[in-house]
Length: 311
Image (cartoon, rainbow, N blue to C red):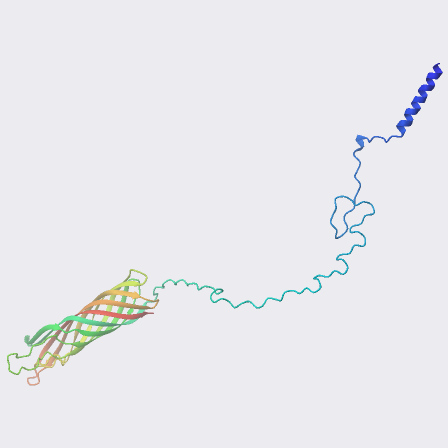
């Protein structure tokens, strides 16, 4: 009986062993997951693919040609459009650069120390006084308003420092005469011509010392004094007792005004002036040989304007 149970148990064990040997063994967790099947990269010029192609498959398929045989580009009979012609002419003013106004350069004030110029003046109001004295006694005396006269002056000035200048002026007055003169004897039926109706001329030599004060880059205020020497040809001015000839003597002039520069070198100016001259001479009598003293006093207010150049 025991031998029968042994035989049954042995048979069951052999059957179980046979069943186990036919199954696939389980994977060992410690050994890790199986590695994936290696793939090869895409062929040159082909797009990459995510999965390997199936065995025996080629991309592109064998016998494939691109472009297809007989295909031409462009298609037969196709003609390109004709080329573009030349560009149209430029529209007047469209492609031109608009003019740009150049900025005005800043004014450059004069930097020189020497200036030369000319003045033209009008001496509008004045007085002339004449006397002929013999041995201290006045034989002839006459004083009246002077007629207006034009004048011309040439000047040179040197400015060694900023506010002070020295200069020299030569001035010429064209018509020195009395404005109104009465005849010698107005009650006579045939009055003679006035002995004070003639005309003379004056030349002045005026060394000048002045002040030049800049109030703006272009504008200077100027004032000066000029003690000098004058000569008046009075031969035709007085025709009584003796010919005075040319009288000479001391003169003094003062002026004030403004000087305006219009460039680095050029300027214009205007001045108001006053001058007074004290002139003397002598005359000898043709009959007695006695000498008489002649005095002539001339004074004028003048307005002068001129132009000059800085060096």
